[in-house]
Length: 245
Length: 392
Image (cartoon, rainbow over all chains, first blue to last red; front, side, top):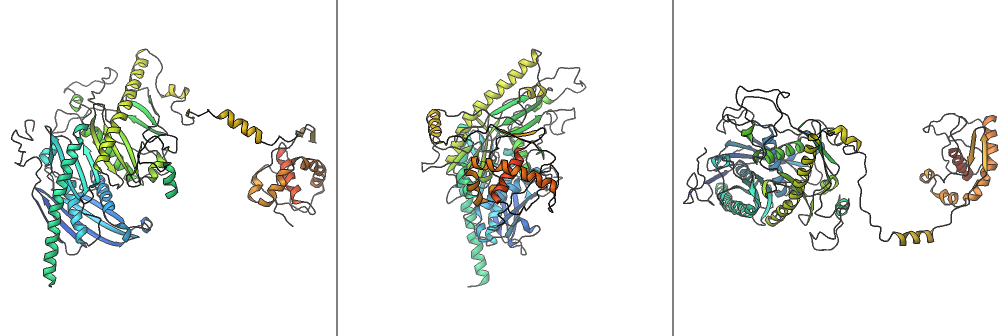
């Protein structure tokens, strides 16, 4: 992959997108009947599925229940067929644990946990096909699932990844662009207030370019928000039709 | 928790993040780092770093393996972090997995993804294997040194502290870790703990990190230089040497700057207001051959817990009590031999507290008797008496 040009002279990326362009996002809510909330999202070739159970009573150790708010429990796993080479350990490895912790941190900040003391909200996310932007797809799917479950949140949580190549910030990286080894930022944003629920960056990026990359990622997250908003409204409209007015 | 929070940074009603007036629990300013000490071990690749009271041991080791199939020209790097149970009471096997995962991943991302170590230089030409003794060790080729700086946020991002210590971390809202190298390239950014950050906060933190990283990198270079020099000159090195000058032992006090500008005034004030010392008693009292008592010890304050009312009376007339003691001691000694019906246990154990009710005695005197008991050199005839509640 040595000669791969991530950004051509005309400003086109490997898959023909422009620097600030997102991949095609399609999402559906309510894909599982038995879960309280579920959602499926496709961001380009990355496909993620999220399922939410809750709020319900604490399972397992009652002692872990928090007296004033709900406990958010997140699990992240990748299907064994999700990557180019078969994944031998879908859960339990350190990356998956870290992702779970990051998802929990993101959603604990966004969900109004004070409304459900001593209960538990479970969020399970599975990546069915990983083509870059795993964390972002998981967060977006989980947001939709939480909304589908009817759990109140402060705001949408929209996430997107961004990179930096040849002085330009790229939004929504695909696997090829991630594997090239350049700097990557994963960012989860609450669009209304512009607050960052989570910020994670890898690989070397000069400090002067940090602002540019953060801007690109924030703008991309806002674009994702517009799309997710549309999906939710569409879903509600359909549900209302089915229930009959 | 709320009181702890307000203690962690002594906040006055000033605009937030004004560094000059805020002072932390350990006396640092908002942007101050704790002291960093670096000691190297005897073998190459072994090092202990102290950041304030946090201590970490790092060790590099290597072995020859065949490379991964899809990366035939690169070596393999493994990072592993362990939280030993000796390090903190909360570190138990199997219980600290969250923190462990976070730290391990942070290490991995900071050091692996930023490509600070040249993995291609780890590749050894096939067919040439050298034992450690045969060849001089070659230092790892390192492109750059990423250094992590942590920022703690309080009260929804209003207050920021650089390099929080354990107590500050317990009450913080969230933590932001930025790893940078001295060329001002950011290697890793990680926010944790669920705080909501704003973009300009992150940018500001990265600027602070740049300054800190430059200082720390210089310190590391100096330490490496020193160690190299000592080894070349044949001097002594390693952890054993560090014990002598108290560099890696835990029980030591840091030098702290003390403001002595108004010491004289304060001292004079205190002297002026203080009571004159009580008269010294020079006459010794002989209890038994070989046991004498000169003067009376300080009034014991253990009785404060049980006899709050008696405290004032007991403390004020030290001089008069002394006389009564001399009178009482003979009686008390006689009492030993007569044998009251109360049990007398001869033991030096402090745990065996026995309440001996001696009829007709003033509780106050009982207390002073107990005092003079403690003033004696412990002898076999000593009876430890528990402080008696006023029986009447």
